[in-house]
Image (cartoon, one colour):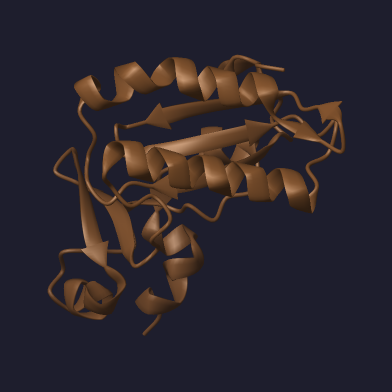
Length: 162
């Protein structure tokens, strides 16, 4: 069952998939009916799931699930990954690849390869205060409150200890 993303409760489970490049409105808009259809049709062991799917910042696909209605199962999570793979094919852009991290710099979203993180920190391009999109968040409440968050307040904090 489709639920508007802003109606999901703070404890709703989320999955964040980062696109390898920013998406244009002309790419996102035609997909909106497919996103809603997936949320409407998504089930777990025959039970309807209360879900929502949306793109944020033209870079992130976020799937949200109100587990207070019904929990996801392994099979339903597999179905969501197949859906993301379908979107990758339609868009011609990777959504499941995890080697890049997203930061806000000068008001713009910038991607950085993980292998370049230490050098970017040493050069002062990324600091503990740089807003970081931590895509490992588990709930809608965390997304609303701490996304992006200062890099030093995320799992990246160990990179800033001296």
